[in-house]
Amino acid sequence: MSVRAERVPEVRVRELRTRDLETVIRIDARHTGEAKPGYWSAVFDEFLGARDARFRIGLAADGPAGMIGYLLGEVRAFEFGSEPCGWVFGVGVDDAHARGRVASRLLAECCRRFRDEGVGRVRTMVLRNNVPVLSFFRANGFVAGSFVELELELHPGGAAAGRGRP
Image (tube, rainbow, N blue to C red; front, top):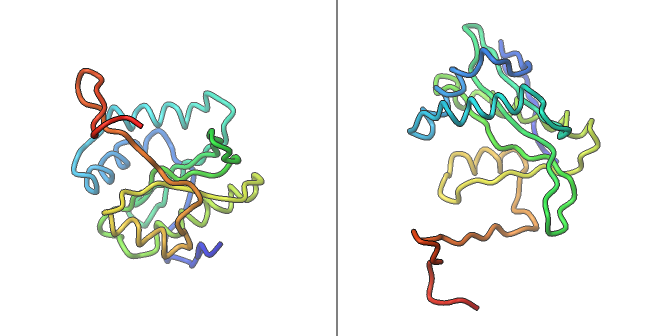
């Protein structure tokens, strides 16, 4: 695993807190083009409320003027023979600090915590045309995994898209 944990000047990684919600919403909206306060409120309730036994990680990166980045992950075990592994499902950095290795610092801390929990593998999913995010994960040692994600688009009324069923 080659997640690099280089020192980023004047950045401190800490636990994500309830008061960070608005900053996460703002950073995510800047990257996705859509503010999702309902979604992020539910994620914060689930993560910071620790409602179940899953191992969860919520990290924030603080710069001299306040919070500049976040990362969310958890240990999950899925069907189809997948062993429990770490999943990173949310990472974002304020545009003013992009390319400053803030996200890499967050990822390195997340991986350290997964490793300390006995996890041997970390996964994530990225849209194949999201080159900046793909490049970030690849630069931090991620490669294509052993599973292939498949999906089926459903039309209104329950009909599956496509030419037929096998």
